[in-house]
Length: 399
Ligand SMILES: *Cc1c(COP(=O)(O)O)cnc(C)c1O
View 1 (spheres, rainbow, N blue to C red):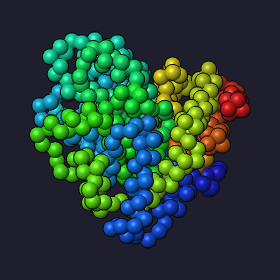
View 2: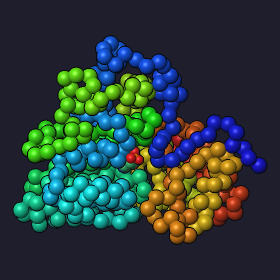
View 3: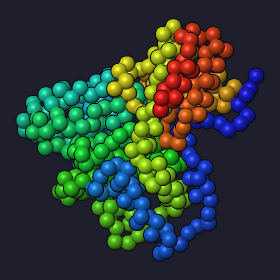
View 4: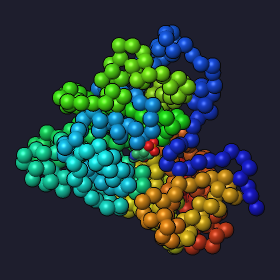
């Protein structure tokens, strides 16, 4: 019997659940884009965007999704014929690598598979072997949303330093900013890319590129950077329109302002990370128990290497798709599809799913997802261990 007629819950890894306050903040007439409150509001958002990333560096805003932020970061740092090293732990590392190739950049990929984080020792070894310092940048993803692995961003920086390699260190935090702890300056990240529709709880459409002085110098030495992607005027605009290379994305900005109020000024970034950590552990506790007697298994075995924003699950075909469909149709919860685990025309594709737990998510929402998943497992006759909800409740109870 369909029991979905209430508030739907999109529990996928982006776009994430948007707070009503963010949506309501967008309900207003077109503002004056020449001067006044919009201009002041945007000036005031820059320090908050930096606070979320724990940086005193620069941030450029783009009217773009994460793919646009990827291209922006590359356009300012790497040109035709430059070489980069990409550390891949899932689909998104490869996606960024492909984009670089299309821009004429020579790409070498260090592949760590779909179930493990970047091995920092291998990174150090590869960089030591690059005695001529041919790699201009090392790129990686903090949280690869397809595998739900979380890489050791600080550890990779240590490997680069141990190899005494001068490459820029560029990190994709699109899935993790505002979910998993990230300390741009303390961890020595030179360029970081993010989007607004995951941890930042705003409708898709804004991309961010953060960069430090070292990256600014690399940008300065570029012979050519396309006008639209150039981060220089966006990060230090003389006129308001330069923030955005044209008309401001006014209503997205209203939404983001409200989201930053909630994250930075009300809950606090450290508390936001702690909430995501506990909610992730709640989900893992249930998955662990279900997996004790049945086909369910978390993609990343070691909790230390798991993202706090998304969890990828293996359950075997056709259970993954069956469970997702049951939850959408019967319970009003939509789980994420498995990404990059099998070809979409292969029956194995139906053996995976992901739970998004990023952004505006709290204890009752997570317990609701888990409770309806348990109902789906029962309804579909998928074998599973008993006591998963109690295990999850214990994590919530302990805080
Ligand atoms: C979502 C995501 C992207 C792509 O962002 P889009 O907004 O879909 O273009 C890139 N990298 C990571 C890690 C992501 O999670």
